[in-house]
Image 1: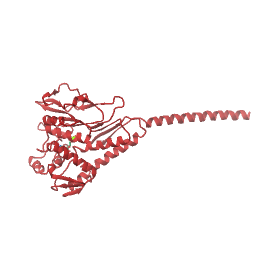
Image 2: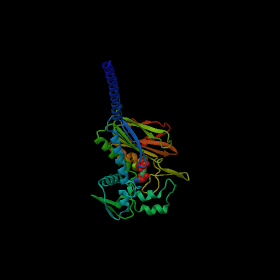
Image 3: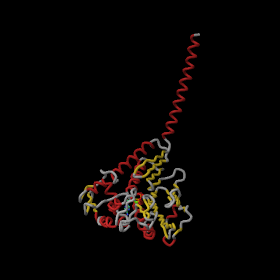
Image 4: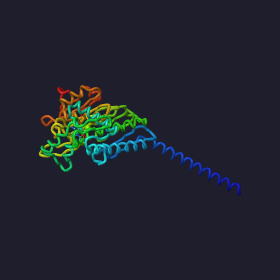
Length: 352
Ligand code: ADP
Ligand code: MG
């Protein structure tokens, strides 16, 4: 009797242990499955929403995304004017010369190159003028204020030699708002590639880098409609390319019927009205970002001419003519399967 009772107890224990093992196996399988899922996350950074979408089923996705966001935050602290201790502010507060980091040397070198190529349409020395506009309190500088600041606008006012930056005048003030986002996206892409990621998208408020789509290779990217925030103007299909859009709808207010926006013509110190939105597709996000701002200022005629001369760079320029929305595309833009969604927009063939 005692023996029989003992074996019954054993049986019960064996069943209990078996259940426990099954439970542990199920938990383990669930955890490892969860860990190797694609991961997409959005954070508020760089003054906008930044989304990182890793499509690979990678166990390190969580770790990788956290590292990318902290990389982005560190670069923001280095380049942004909103951090008093940023390198950009140290340059702006410096007297005539200052030692700069390698990243700053790179960003200044590319800025100068784009400035030269666009005859000054892109110019980071526009800083003092940008500071005079306030898109929250709706403040426009007076002509006299602009004239006094324009004296310090122009790449000839700064010079870089190795790790030294020289300013012609203490009051020269730089603003990296037109290029830093692209530069930071490129740094994030390099980091992801180093970690073996090949299927991801980074979107920093209109500055995108698109790797490979796991199913279709290319990603279909919607281009924001410049006059209807809830609609798309068109779409393109890309892989391993930067797609950057700059528009007059990002930061603006209306005064006396005029749209006062954040893309400024360095020649006049006032917003540029030659374009309403520009999308640049290029292998490099830094160059795409700076070129996008420059082409916006140059307008459709000069802008498309410049892009057509460039290898591997394409653009869509949307502009207004007689209150109608018109657009022009660079000669190779169609290789990205551009699809027009706003069928009322007019195609300007003569500008292509
Ligand atoms: P967004 O930041 O909205 O994507 P852009 O890339 O075009 O748009 O950058 C606009 C920012 O660039 C402005 O907020 C300002 O800081 C700066 N900026 C404006 N005009 C110029 C210009 N002509 N050259 C260089 N930087 C500019
Ligand atoms: Mg830009």
